[in-house]
Image (cartoon, rainbow, N blue to C red):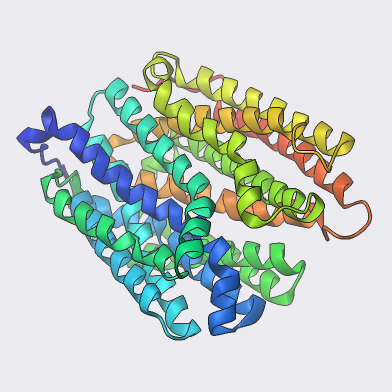
Length: 460
């Protein structure tokens, strides 16, 4: 049985802007902390030691629990209320951030990152569920998601720049400390948000455990394979992901109250949007990895100037959904998804051609980065909006599924493109980098076919 709590009176009018600000500020922090820490790793290593393995633990301590817990957290948001899950996630994220800022040893820092990742996993699907509850009309909801998407893109883009600036004026601890005032303000403001839809159903503990194990092992395994090639640890993690994933699927078929309602497995719109989201992040983040190698290793730029050089890709990712949201909602999602992937394919091919012809020059890369950024800016809103519109009564678990697909795509893209690029200092490295973008064009064509097939319906 599903019950819905209506939004507070203030949310219906002017309060909606405040609600969107609260949700977007939390999303901004979640994605900012994915990228901001990368520029701080050398400073952390100098202060705490640990070498490359320690730096990897600082990164993975956040990304692995974030991805692993998304589906479970989405189910929790549907069961106990999205506002409650959102606030719990905010508090956990804030505590983890303070723990990171105050850490005196590497294990304490990694523990803080894990707590941050758990909090971020709670916030992501809950924020989508709250958007669904506050903006019930499809067009209004799509515009809200467009703003949410644009803020998300700006966080990823600004991470390296903000991190570099903070480290330049102080300590790496500032990159975690700046989260605290935003978390406090968002937590206080969250009391004005609606509770969100709740579902009175038994908790599927077996589904929660097996889905978390499957997602966590898959992400960790792909990260390890991308880092070390066909290492025994990576292969073992992928095998464990397959085993726990199989157990999850079998358990869902037999459970009286499955974690993912059975009707969602038959919801073609949701499955198509999830496939498109996976493909979008796979190519987008894989391409960013290759560009980082190209700009820093081949062209000899430092981390900050390399971040500035990628602004032609990040700027449209942020600005397209923000500036064109009213026009985008008038276009059928299937058409917008197709157009976005077509623009992305052109961008990937342009990047491949630029790397083949002039790997040491920045200017030839700009058209491809612009097209890829425009594609990402066009895709996020319709893919997310299609997902939540496919099953608004289970917005939490749908948000968890969509974000889990995106996180899996990110990890697989980094592993795949990293494997194709190989050693960036070996002969023929730039040729292999160019082939990465060709592969990216092919993957985006496949994603377009999966996500925007003939039977895809408009958002209703």
